[in-house]
Amino acid sequence: MTNLNYSPKDILQQEFKTKMRGYDPIEVDEFLDGIIKDYETYNKEILTLQEENDRLNAKIAQLSKSQAISSRIQATPEAPKSQAVTNFDILKRLSNLEKEVFGKKLDQPTPTNGFDSSLNRSAVHFSDDDDLEKTRQF
Image (tube, rainbow, N blue to C red; front, side, top):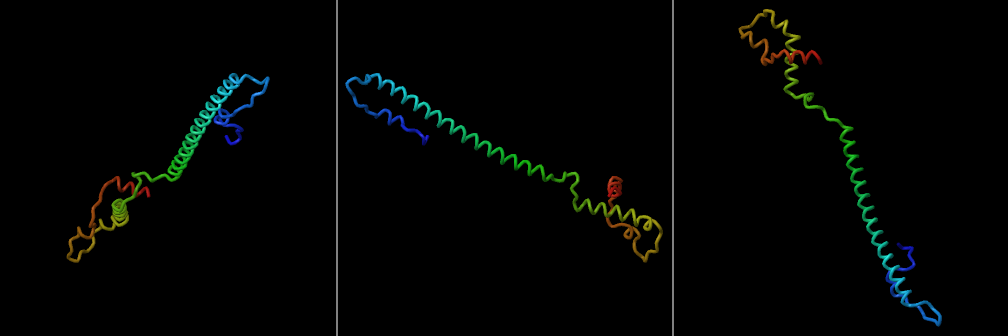
């Protein structure tokens, strides 16, 4: 809008000199009134379009930002909770490994020095066949 030669106000306030055989002043004023209305209509339309353009650009920026965030989230997948290893799981696996490796030796009679033989075998007892199978998988 900086390239306009006349604003609606300039057109409205313009005064023309009258000469002997000039144009009809009433007809010129009516024509200029129509031009002023057109200028105002175009100005309103330009403002409306600029607002819509700004709104759409803001929406594009917001969607681009949310897409970048979602792509970052998808790029760093989290481990499923079913595969998460806890200390308890590690202890169970360790116990199962000990049973597997040392179980045969513990089943054989060993001399006890007056101690209860059940204490020598295992202090913690985790005997699930599923846990044994999981340990063998690793």
